[in-house]
Length: 333
Image: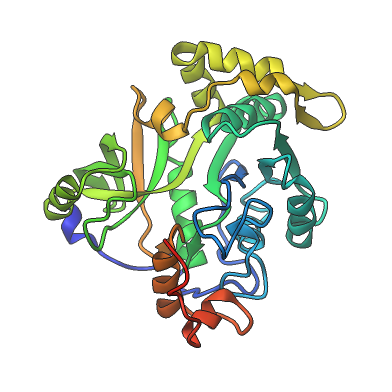
């Protein structure tokens, strides 16, 4: 049963609380993975901590690095990952490029969206670009602004998920709910998993009501959707061709890939739709790998406060300032 899942760490039993060197395991998947880091959002939910010009991922969350830099370094092991593809807005293109270069050097591709179109259009764009270099490319889609405590466990979970993406499957990463949270999507999992950590997904549910979230928590068969997904580019493109043909066509028409990839103004005509709604809620086979480590999407002032009080941090970071007594009363979640 999901409610009796065992804990533990990957990476030969090593526990990594935060990320000094980003080399954590000595095994790698049979195929390297292309990270796709989504640097979106309007930066207004955490105002005045963040703004449209200075989004959350550019804050120094728990270390001397920005949250975006931590995200890039989390997927920087060249034995496992290829160079990442980053998506952001034209408004933040310059500052994101500068910030990302401090973690990745020149080893990344940055694509600025002419207009924000949620998460599905950029992931289709990434799938098209990656498949040009490798017909069966593996993509790891992840937000730019999350906290993950144990790097060794996360990397092991990614490697485990990579072995589950055959035959048109998408691998999701779920987190055990601690309370009846209404701000997340939920993944309903079969009781019987593979090795106790990989589960067949029965259904995917967007943000529930309080009553329904309490039922999910009580059942013990639901995990919170972390917003991270691993899949083959060919899987997403085949799905889009069948179920999202107009969106796929619009994206294909918008890509300009002569010297460096970019998106043309016609991209604005793409439907604004999330990957969760367009794909994960649709008729596609999914599995879920459980993240048995500390995780937060840092989506509200309260979730940032809780993470700051729970996890280690460096002096000069937002977490450390909160632990030191930064008042949160002026802020609204």
